[in-house]
Length: 504
Ligand code: BES
Ligand code: ZN
Ligand code: ZN
Image (cartoon, rainbow, N blue to C red):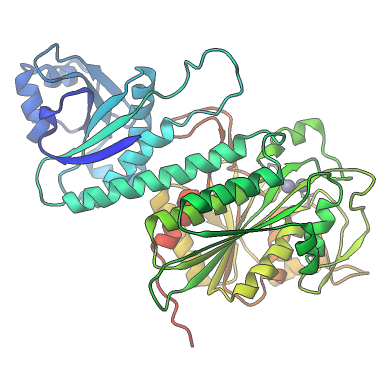
């Protein structure tokens, strides 16, 4: 996809279509809308007057200039009331517009940017949201069908038109960021949508290596023998049931700038979760090829940080394995000694995410990060608690949580804070070992987070449970069917806005 920003009036575009921003209060048009309306003898105003198109959020109108302008179609994108505008509403409106472009099988399209800051949305943010809406809605599930591929997006070229010179820098930055943020989401979707026989832990590690070679970051893949030397026995215990070798994927992006903060990201990389000996039902197993989405998000985010050239050092740790039952599998009641030295009594092998993350978190501590964020499709109980609209966040540091909540507002990937009160720890007490990996069903997502907290230790830490938001049953605006890629834009926003923590 080729994306560029041009200075000039959008009515001068020569293209297959032009997307125009339309608000509900359109008594009198100004700027490009007026110029186009005049050229078309009032056709735009007529669409409003007829009442067919009210510019409600997500509403799309299509008009044909019939040779009176140098583009073939006008796509009117309804943004709702001007006074109610938010970044997310622009993203949603452009998600619908993007779907229309796909439906019409257009290759080359021009888009009208905003001319200035809106009271609630900066020019850079509106430009970024437009790009995200279009690119995210044009994502198609990589299919394994052999026949015709009609469903593919045809979009090849997008041109963003800004009439006045003032603010063109902001538009340029917004468009560039939108491209990178959307890439990260779509890449995460791609990996999480891949069936487990097309994405083994080795395949995931290969993808990480490939990206690292293309981008400017390091990737080290540790095989089982190295993982063993590191004494990450909790991770290896989960891997014991599978013939596919486990991989510890370690990524490192370092900005050349000096005295920067180090952030560690940890992502659950279970490429298939059958539950182990605590076997899942067929129905519950259906989505479990996507149990590595946290890992995919960490990989995309580190690559995104490199593309954005953020002034940070970002470490990514992705423990990748399958969770299968077999003669060599981890058994219920087993006690394992984790990387941290703490012993864990395993009472349910389906609570495997926390076992691999326990080791990955304590391993991540060895990079002395200023903060750690882990992201995982961890518990079905977060879906019961919060549904499919937002992720649950847990953390031991108020300032860090506030930053994550702000990043969620801006990225449209919403989060809700869950508690981590001391009383919950009681449920994880083991008679035999330092801790047990399950503590009953009530408050299941909190108990899982409480378990992880033990291994994150005293470092500022946030856990994002994405098990409720990992998968979409149907497409809608910029959301595609299947894996959502939730978390990539959230983490990129969080890191982009990172303010230095003063050490000492
Ligand atoms: N991968 C699952 C969690 C999950 C469920 C993700 C649904 C996406 C959709 C996780 O490994 C798991 O099985 N968790 C158990 C924990 C329980 C045994 C304490 C769960 O949530 O049921
Ligand atoms: Zn599980
Ligand atoms: Zn799992």
